[in-house]
Image (cartoon, rainbow, N blue to C red; front, side, top):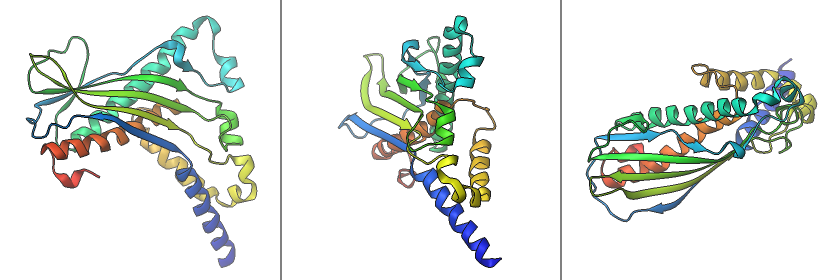
Length: 243
C-alpha cells in the first residue's frame, strides 16, 4: 500500500509539474523611459484593451462550433472579447492595488488631470484553439493563445509622455492531455483534481468560460511584475514589492 501511494504521489507530482511548466508566458519590454524621479501618480487609469473582431478565433471544438449560431458570430466574438478584456483590466486593478497605488478602470468619459498614469493596450490575437484536442492530446495540439501590446503614459496638460511599452504573449503550451498521460494520468488523479480545483477557485469570482480570459489574468500578473520594477525605480513603491 505504501508503495502504491508513493507511486501515485510521484505520478501526481510529475503531472502537476508538467501542467505548470508547460504553459508559456512571455512579457517583453520594448521601451522604457530613462527618466528617474518622476512624481508619484495620484491615480493609475486602466483602459480596457481594444481588439479587432477579425483577430478572434473561437473554440474549434466541434461541440462548441455546433452550439454556435453562425448568424450571431459577431455577437459571440464580442462576448469573448469582452470577457478577455474584463479579465485583463480587473486583474491589473487587483495587482496594482496590491503594490500600494490607486488604479481605476477608465473609459472615454473619464476625466484626465495632471499626475495620472494611463495604461492602454491592444489585443493582437485571441485564439481559443480546440479545447477537445488540447485536453485529450495536448503537447501543443489545439493550444489556445493570447497576444497583446501594452503602452504606459504619464499624462499632463502639455501632452502624454510614453513611459513603457510591452509585447505580451501567453499560450497553453505543450502539456500532455489525458489520453497521452494514460496510466500516469490516472494514478495522478488526486493531484490533477487538486490542480483543476485550484484553477476553478481562482476564476470562481468571475466564472470566466474562455481559456483566453484566464490567460489574460496571468498576463496581467506578469505585466504588473514588470511595472513594479519601474515603479520601484521611480520611488513610488517599496522595492521589496518588485520581483
